Length: 145
Image (cartoon, rainbow, N blue to C red; front, side):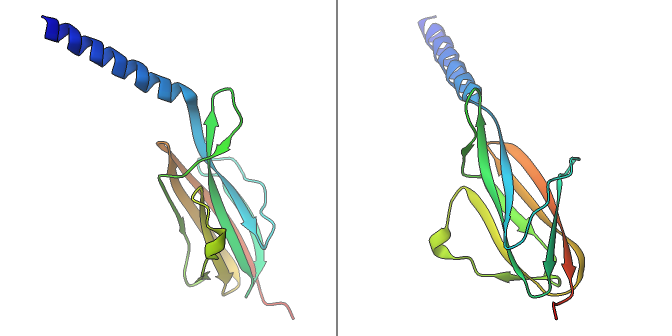
């Protein structure tokens, strides 16, 4: 009987600790940014869509920064559990990242536009159990003369 009471007390403490962790973080998401070209405002939908215009040969850096949204506090950067950028390698060439700019809260990809047309770059990530997808619709214009 004493062991049963001890087990029940241990379970109650575990439940309280788990609930306290959930109460501190009310959500998480990713903030999408671009460097090297102006990123348009996202269009709402099941998967938010951003727009981006570049020229053939132009390099653009896309970043998705994990953001923890604490209850009653300001959003703060957080390290994602998983994150990836998906793109058409016929439309873009992957460029090397600068190591000195590494930030564990960001998933970064550097792409060089190879051919004119419209294509999509998709971000897929997970932070604190929240899954997120974003699309960046890229319009690539012909090379400047």
